[in-house]
Length: 294
Image 1 (cartoon, one colour):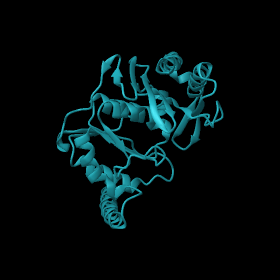
Image 2 (spheres, one colour; image 1 turned 120 degrees about the vertical axis):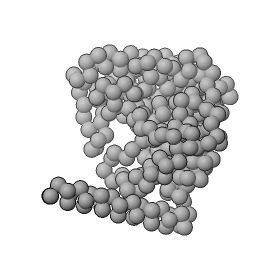
Image 3 (cartoon, one colour; image 1 turned 45 degrees about the horizontal axis):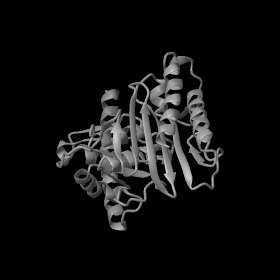
Image 4 (cartoon, helix red, strand yellow; image 1 turned 120 degrees about the horizontal axis):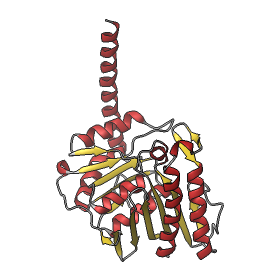
């Protein structure tokens, strides 16, 4: 099954690489404000689905662009696909994007492929058999002190996203780490945690196709993944936290007040923090406006 997923990912990657040679000619449309889809997303997903269903016609498909319209939605085996994670990066020629394919069998993630076509980096994992990058075994980082760690995230960008709360989260994390990064492709962010390139990752608003393949990479590389409170049932909860075991525990302690599953006491404390941060931002903007008027 893994070999078929690799074949599908490389076929999609070839489509993406050809399009990247003349990215300005790619047709782009908006699903909503700041949420783009291109003809390359669609072509990439089509070749992935065709490749998978040729090999496994009774399997189900959950795709970012096509949902569950292909395959058998009642199958015990569901392929979870993001044909081009990092579309906004791609249409700007910013080379951080990937293909993500995972197989979930009877509710468990069993196979994973994350393919970065611009670098020809192939991340793979099979449950119980480890995670690999181009045939090299992966392990999460060994750092134990949060202040020495590089953590990646994704910024809110959709209408209705809670920007003030996310600014508060970032303020808490930035003060306690060596750096915060926002590459813009969650599946690749998770693969980088598995490879030890970064020590942790967190983001809200994610869908299963953003997380599934990267999640198996992380657990097979010795890391942990869950929601902000540390619970492992995260795939459909739209909040994700991952890291090596020591850093994961420290990030849970830092981020759990921001979880939608947080206690009332934690939510009240976060609300006060967000209000204080908002007041500081308003004061800063008022001061800038005053300088402009002068």
